[in-house]
Image (tube, rainbow, N blue to C red; front, side):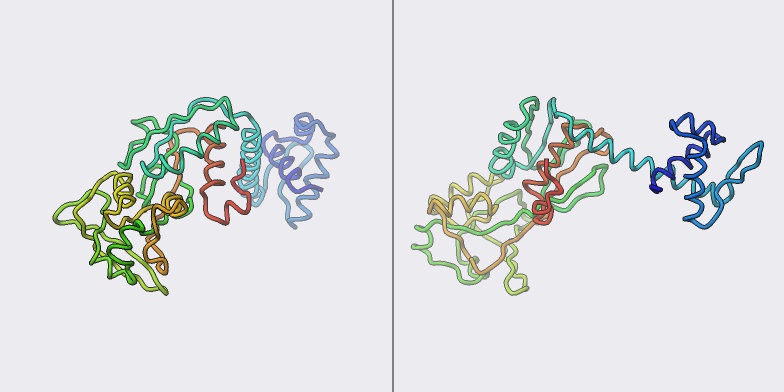
Length: 307
């Protein structure tokens, strides 16, 4: 007999106290209830229920087995509910927070495609590089680049956020192509981020498994990477930025990859939802689509995150 069916009958017998009551609850005969319990006990090689003509009660093993069966059956019901929910049509507003550069260049096209598939969904996208409070600021989905802090969030890994160095053809013609990471010390670097006298920027490159660190210097710094990319296109220096954005410029011929023999820095990236907020159909569907589009290669190829 089916193992899960036997467990279900056993749990009902433990809770209702008689085979007749179980038969009424599960719409089967008392004889069939007895067969399920007997098959379960035979497979386990032990007695689960002490039965007399007047009453029945669980054995010590039966009580322990009952608790585990109840938990397992609850998980099965939850798994079935997830499938049912995923088959429902997502609708409503999804409030999303994401980093500025990734959000404007890469996430935005994904969202427009997603909205084309789900006409009853609206997305309210806020872009910022600061750490946000999802409960206080009412965000349902958050994408973050960098190591995760210990917070009340459920997180799924996305593909690492990879960076490469680029400069314009005119800059390379004028100042030459760096051959080693250390050569960047002789070049004008366009530095992204917040800085201070006590905290300097670091660019990390890898070649043949070895790490090489560069502390870039230049006269143009900004907390808006788009400004630095535009400066690089105009021939003002070397910029370090996201691969997916710079590849478009490389294809157009406005930029050339610098140090192509090196692997640039990469940072972990995650999509997160607050633990305190219920994962509704609209959120589950959006998360699955994000993981399919931007998740690690193994997730994308396996179809685990298919919508």
